[in-house]
Image (spheres, rainbow, N blue to C red):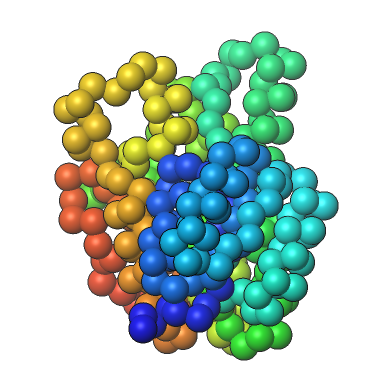
Amino acid sequence: MTLLEGTAAIITGAANGIGAGMARVLAGEGVSLALCDIAPPLHDLAAELEADGASVMAAEADVSHPADVRRFVDAAIERFGRIHTMVSNAGTWRATYPTDPWDQAVDDFDVLVGTNLKGVFLCGRAIAPHMAEMGGGNIVNIATDHICPPPGYNTGGGTRMDVYDASKWGINGFTQAWSRVLASDGIRVNAFCMDATDSKMIRGALGITPPQELLDRWMRPEQIAGLLVDLLEEGPDGRTGENIGIWLDHEVALPPRVDPLPHRFQ
């Protein structure tokens, strides 16, 4: 029996990449899973996990649509009774420049902010009241190393990422505020800020088949999933309000917990 056996988790953006890796690893820990994505391969993953004995529900849902999120979260609660973990993993990327044509720029903003930031907002707001009523839980937001770079490096991504980075910076606001407000309800809120991890999104952003030497450097979804297990196993007294940096050429492990600085506003 594992420490997580008998718990239930929601994972958004679970059809492939990091989300699928998390689903496979959590299923192996005995966690019941509610998975959503806009990509039909989600159902192939659910069938795979069910064949291995996991308890899984899967639904196509767009995290940028409030009705989709409300319907999916409510269905997960009805299915499993209690949701212990929400992983807001769904994300997308487009190349953007400050000189893009107006209509394209507005559309890119709506898509990137809608999925990457509004999706985190909707999922967190949908699950927080349930977790508070149930006595606690974990919210894990997926940000980026662009806001939490390795020591010695500046923040920010590439030159084609102004809107993407803005959407991910916004997640920090939710992570920090929620971790303070929800602590008294036993809810921990943290963010993973990972460097290049092999996924459909990063391969698409690269625009070419990655050379093997690059693939060998990239992290694997299962490594990020292993960190998720470690984070959840810290239990109710574990860290909260942290942006956890996960970087290439560094050990893939949870860093030591840090003492939070005092807040200017109470």
